[in-house]
Length: 61
Image (tube, rainbow, N blue to C red):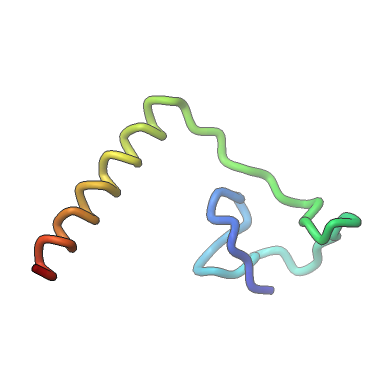
């Protein structure tokens, strides 16, 4: 099954790795377990992503 929740532990290459899932009444996965990130890890990931985007943007100019 396709999945867009990259923070779920069952996510891999845009696909849910579980063989069977349950959805709630809003269509959200009830089996989703999200990664726990510290504020520091999240900030570092934001900074890394911004640097990557800046480099890509510089190449387009």
